[in-house]
Image 1: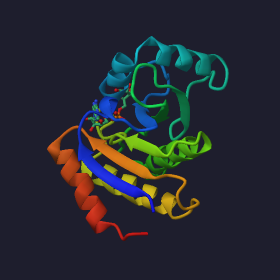
Image 2 (image 1 turned 180 degrees about the horizontal axis):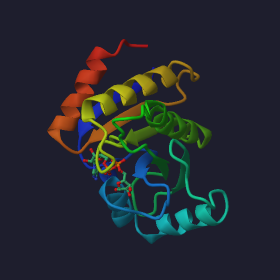
Image 3 (image 1 turned 90 degrees about the vertical axis):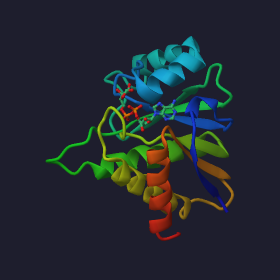
Image 4 (image 1 turned 135 degrees about the horizontal axis):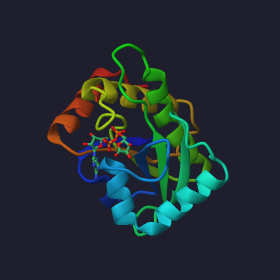
Length: 179
Ligand code: APR
């Protein structure tokens, strides 16, 4: 049975196999989680991001996709970069946000990660309302975990940067039916 944890903290300090980065399509760094991971992890992460741009993703990492690199100096074994959608009043982009979580989990599984830490993807610079971001995150991960072989992922940890975000994720977990 996979443990799902919801905690307030800094994702760069998490001692898990995979840390998920809320990147942008360029894969070349930015602010928020992206900036924190590159600052704490060091230049090796950006070097590998550049290699991904030169090979697999010449046009950038598509929104909703995920790709792994070294974690550099971080305690984790890998960073899984994903790109969440920018919030839109006019257009429902929920599927792309769900895909960012789903694809990150898939890449973690493909690489044998037993534990993974997620930030609140799209809920910062990209403006997604936190409650809805939490609902999508929790329901997507719960649905995916119900479909994978038991024991392949031991721990999924949502690491939130504020009490408000942590509370939103805790409420979403209470509200979502257990899979
Ligand atoms: N640890 C955990 N969570 C963090 C950290 C951190 N060190 N730093 C920020 N956060 C939180 C934010 O408070 C927000 O709730 O992560 C959530 C996601 O915020 P962003 O990092 O802004 O990510 P996102 O909204 O997906 O926007 C992505 O922002 O930083 C740029 O390069 C990034 O262009 C990309 C865009």
